[in-house]
Structures are given as structure tokens and as C-alpha cells.
Image (cartoon, rainbow over all chains, first blue to last red):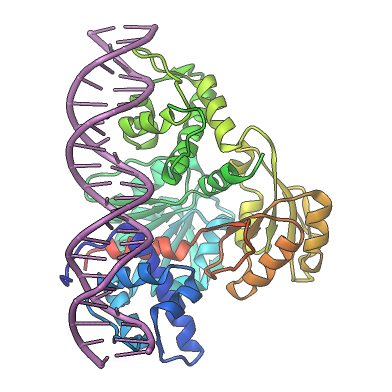
Amino acid sequence: MPERSKIPDPSLARLATVYRALLDSQRNGRKSLNSLDLQELTGIAATQIRKDLSHLGEMGKPGVGYDIGDLKRRIAERLNLSRRQKFAIIGAGRLGQALASYPGLVEFSFKLAALFDVDKKKIGKVVNGVAIQPAAEISKNLRRHRVRIAVLTVPASAAQGAAEAAVQGGARWILNFTPAHIAVPAGCVVRNVSFTNEFAVLAHFVEK
Amino acid sequence: MPERSKIPDPSLARLATVYRALLDSQRNGRKSLNSLDLQELTGIAATQIRKDLSHLGEMGKPGVGYDIGDLKRRIAERLNLSRRQKFAIIGAGRLGQALASYPGLVEFSFKLAALFDVDKKKIGKVVNGVAIQPAAEISKNLRRHRVRIAVLTVPASAAQGAAEAAVQGGARWILNFTPAHIAVPAGCVVRNVSFTNEFAVLAHFVEK
DNA sequence: GCATGTGAATATGTTCACAGCT
DNA sequence: AGCTGTGAACATATTCACATGC
């Protein structure tokens, strides 16, 4: 398989899931795994896992399985998890603070660089080692610290403004936890995460 | 289009997005919209929206557009949003509390029925009108209040146990915010929501 | 004339079956 | 024998093009 093939989006998400399973297994002293072990750990079908991994080039030993260290390295490389990625959170409400101190992000080598809010009473409060700063300084601070990833956890009505400030400050990758649709200049990537949509999809399956 | 066709999963999620846009437009006094207006509001391609809506049967007037009231009703009916759905949150950390008081869920007619945590210091604290209860009472309380939807916002290591208690109490639909893979009996539906996967997918697109 | 609804064409993603390496 | 890696078959989802109804 060509070393530089484009990986399908759902495959990327599954690779992240596999990556976490590898971290856990490694902590448990495991050295290698086969695709069936991974199915057990993640709930993803073994054949699907092999197909996903095939996008990274040959990895495993037929008849044996995968070396955890190798596999981790290859996935990390491809998902850009091998280099520390700084990110900023805009909106220090409960959700923003939950994300700010979420340990799973550290394992994926994300580094909280800044935290912003409009609420004057919150300014200065420290979460996970980072002090909450006034929203007015978003652009200036993102630029100064060369932060390229912004996470929006503000109310929907403030989302577009927050996104614009972030882009102004040089952010190009935005994770939008807001239900609002945000418009960004070409070259910016937005990924929307909607809780309520997840609830709604689940609700559809609830029997009447 | 047959009135009872199976709607593709991604389509369900988009319908939820459209539904929210309709709520907003209605608040702004709007009476009707066409598929291009909806594209503007949601970022979803007009042609995709029409295809999604076609799963609900004929809805719009050619040359005119869609009546917001009608459309809302039809979507709500199909997504099961027209009847109040009780749900419980297991794990009253920052994320659990954020979800507990998230206003978007009320608009989708979800009703927080119970909130649980193992931490004795949190027991009794009231969030969004609901007192936090001890985790030991999950099964008993879910059953008593006939709650069928459980939301897991506990640490990964506690996820399987929490799920089992919820199922024991009669829950059949589980929204898992934990990175852990959880096993449930046949007939239970689990939907996984992973923050870190969203971060990881975004990271993949960050240029080196 | 204008916007919907839909079959047909395309693109994307998943599953299968098995050849080939260890 | 055991498990990977992959082309080929299948399934699902999106886009297009246009006939139809207002």
C-alpha cells in the first residue's frame, strides 16, 4: 500500500481508538497484539482494523501480530501525535474547564496553551496550570504563543466572534463544540462536535 | 418516498442540525425557508438537505420552500423529539455537570431525571434542579423513575461498571463519553462520543 | 420561473475471501 | 498452522441532472 495514501476520515477516528488501546495495553505490560486482540479491546472488527492499519504501510508479522511500540509510533506519526500540539480553549465554562483538565488529551500529546473567557469574575482563575485570560486578548495571545488550534466552548451566540478572533490570531484548526455553524476563511479547517446531535441520533432509536 | 424508510445515520445527525436551525429561525419570526436558506444556516449542502428531508416524505412546496412549523413537527416525530425523554447522567464531574445543565438538551425535549456520583462530598449537591445521588443507587433509581437512557461521564476505568448498573436498572440506550469500550447485552444500544478522537482527527490535518 | 423531490451516476467506505509470509 | 495484507465484491452515502408541481 502506498506510504502516502489518503486515509478515510472514519478510519482516522478508529486509529485514534486503537492508539488509546495500545497505550493501555502497554501500561499493562503487553508487548504485542494481533488484530483479534484489538477487536476485543476496542469493539472494532478485526478485519476493519487490518484495513485501517494497511493505510500506514506494512506493520505486522503474519502468524504473530503487531509490536505495540512499532504500531504506536506509526499511528502517532500519521495522526500527528508525535509532536506536541498547542491548543487554546475559548470559553471557560464547565465544558471548557472539563476539556482543559482532561487527561486523555495529554496522552495524545496535546498541550493546553491558553484559556479565555469574557466573564471578569473568572479572569485569573487557574485551570490545569493555565490562567483564564480575558477574551479581548485572544488574537494577541494566540499569535504570541503561536497557537494554531482553537477549541470553542462558548455559547452559540458567541461562536462566530470567537472563531474570528482565533483566526485573527493565526488559528487555522478549529474544534467547534457549539451548535452554531461558523464561517471561516479558506484554508481554515473546522470540525464540529455536537452533543445534542448525539442525543438526537440516540433518541431516534429509542422505541416508542 | 416510502413513509417508513430507514434513515441513514449521517442523515439523522444532519436532521438534528436542521432542527436546531429551525428553532432559531422560528425565534427570529421566520415562517418558511427553502433548502438554500438552510444551507446558509447550517453549512450543509442544499441538495443534501433535500435528500435528507425526502426520507420524511414530501414536505415542501416546489417554487416556495418549507413551512417551518411543518418541518419541525415532521423531524421531531421521526427523531423521537416530540415526546419528553428522561435520561440519567452517571458521573457528576465537570463534564457531567456541564451536560446536566446544557440548555440545548431541553430544546430537544430531553429531561434530566437523575445524576449520580461515587464521591461522597458531591452527594446532595443540586445541579439543574436535580440532586446528585450515590452511585450505589443507580439501578434502583433508574428503575423507579423508568429511565431508559444513561449517559456515562465517569473515568474510563469506571465505565463498564456504570454501564452494568444502568442496564441492571433498565437502561437500554447508552451515550458513552468515556474512551473505554463497553460491553452490553444484546438489545442495548451504545453510542460512543470521544473528545480525544475528535482532537486526533483534527491533528491529522494540522500541517507539519 | 422557481424550488422541490428523485432516479441515476458517482464516490466513498466496509466486508469478504484468500494468497502469501513467518 | 496462524495471522497479516489486499484486491475484488458489496454496501452505503453523496452528488448530479432534471422531471414535476406550485
